[in-house]
Amino acid sequence: MGFCLFNNVAVGAAYLRWRYGLTRILVVDWDLHHGNGTQHMFEHDPGVLYVSTHQYPYYPGTGAIEEVGRGDGEGFTVNLPFRRVSVMPSTSRRSPRSSIRSPGSTRRSSC
Image (cartoon, rainbow, N blue to C red; front, top):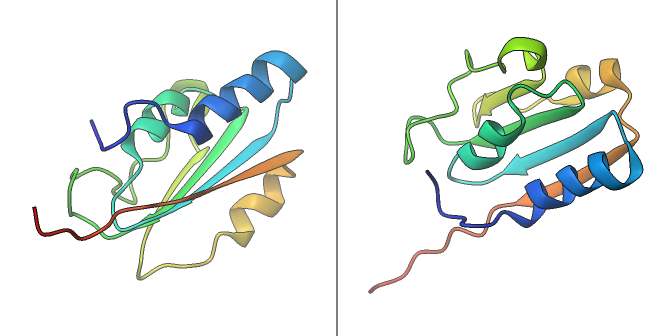
């Protein structure tokens, strides 16, 4: 998968669904790398709109614009490589009751 063993934003969104019964949650992820773990966690869930901006096709090689969710969650995954930046049309149609920001923390190091 990606860099996160436990993704706080994905866990937080799942908690909001479970504890408070929220049915419309927005997760926005912007980073150099695609948040494939978060996408995978919610790709079947129409209660979570997952929007990701990232460079593509860099590691982990996921996040193509054609990846839009699966089953009941189809249309609730929005992948926007950096050349496409507008998320407002997708978010305004779904009227989320909560939104969670997921800024990436990829750093360059000289290991």
